[in-house]
Image (cartoon, rainbow, N blue to C red):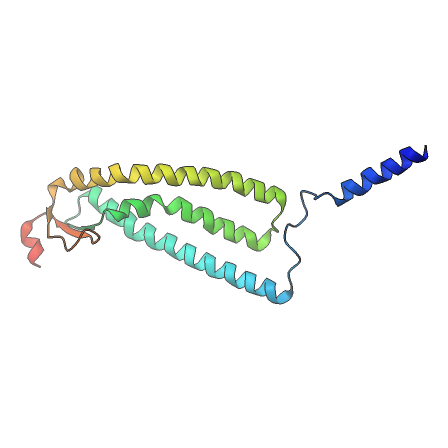
Length: 168
């Protein structure tokens, strides 16, 4: 009986020493470290949200103008890449926001790792799709437009409906 009790105590001690799924992976932060972490998170949220709004406004309006047939369009092949990267920026924006309120636990880390694998697959698919979409936009909807000249391969081009508008 004493062997059973000692083995039971050993099992309970081992179980107590094992990492619980709700335990923190990181050490306890001091107040100064926590303040730095919160400011860093707010800065990351500010940058990610700002870039999300900026790219949605600029790239989205450019591609919308191309398909609506606006008189003047400033189009760059990078607009498709920027538009397809918006969900990835949103994912990381939400991730940083959740880091402010939820401690990093094993369950949360496993969940985010699974979601990160989905995001990485989306990044690969979006990168592969961006090339044909960019070529499609350059040749099909922009076929009705006239180019006002190109300054370089990495700069955008103004497209107009009437060639006279290039002089303005």
